[in-house]
Structures are given as C-alpha cells and as structure tokens.
Length: 248
Image (cartoon, rainbow, N blue to C red):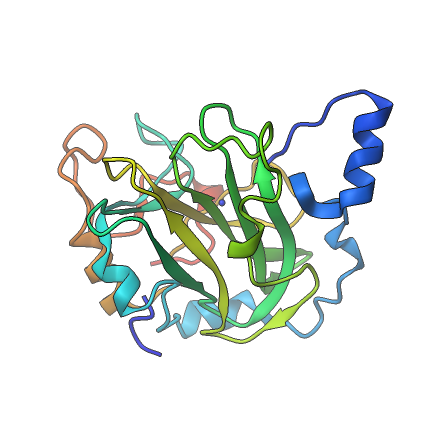
C-alpha cells in the first residue's frame, strides 16, 4: 500500500475514582503494562534503517485532507516540539480519517481519553522494532482540538475511533483507528507522531522511518513558519543525538 499515507493521563487521589477506573478499564487511559508483552518477534531496528517503510499512516484519501504538516522539532531547535504533525482541513467537516500501521508490530498502549485541558485527546502506541535492550514504538497522539472534554464529560467519547486493543499484533498497512475531525472552523486538528522507547518517559525521537517519496510529500506540506521561517527537507529538524535512531 504505497503512499498509505502521540499521553499522559491524570488521575485523582480519591478512592472512589480509583475504583471507577478499575471498573471501566481504559475509559481514561490504559491500566496495563506493556512489560508483559512478547517483543521477541519484532524486527531489529537495523531492518528499518536499511529498508524504510513505503507505508505512511494515512492513505490517499487521508492525505487529501491534510492542510499542512510540520517536522519533528528537536531539542536543538529554538522552537522545539518533540513530535511531527499533520493537520487537517475544515473543508467537508465533520469527517473521519483512517489511520494505519506503517510497520508490523504490537499495540502496547491504548488511551481512549487523555486530559490535556482545553481539548482532550486519544491515541495508541505501536511497537515496531527492537533496539538493543529497548523496544521502539511509533506513537500516535490524536488531537481533534475541538474543545471536547472527555475527561469531564463522556470518558468513552473517543473509544469508537480506536479499532485495536493492547497486546494485539498488527500487520503493516492494517487499519488501527480513525481521526475524528469535527467542524471547528480551522485546521488546528492534527495527529502528533514520533518514535520513542516503550515504557520510558522523555525518550521522544524523530519518526523518520519512511522512504523518500513519502518524506517529499510531507515536506511539500510544511508551512513557511516552521521554526521562525527555517525550512527543512527532512522529518527531523535539529534533533539532539539521542532524538534520532535512524540516520539519514
């Protein structure tokens, strides 16, 4: 499928709230640990370094709805943001966009509701490779930016748009979920994506696992205000050494 073309939840300290979360499972984030998963069958990261993915997480219909994009803005950049974005047009909203697996792997985390303040989000992590003692994940943070507060309203509001479960094995190109674009009058709605080490905080890395034709298409959507006017021809903009696992 050529051209098939990111979560920390907060919890209260009260006993009844803990009981609610235990009863309703993943309503406001995952409760299980990925340490129980068997990653032995995953490819070594060297395989992705030598054969980059020809499959983006959006198909052609999804790419047609992308209004703009931005690269992973590394910690060496003055406008650091540790994730790349694709933003979606308001034209034709409301609609959904299919999200696919860019590589085979295992779903290690599912978040149906993440409280981030003004607009809540959802998403999942896909383990795609082993790198020494680490497992590398592809992280999807799905951010409609429409003001919906699932954490204080309906905690299962986003659940229908996640089509996988923790521990599920998936193939490259498999449908994992959907991005929900409501009619909000702008294109702030986006998917934030990056690589990271599974179970390790502050390990965000550039998601440069894609072959050149996909990168070229994304670079063509980068806006001119990327990092105060600077442009890049890569999905990585000024990453620190530990923020890039696949060398370009």
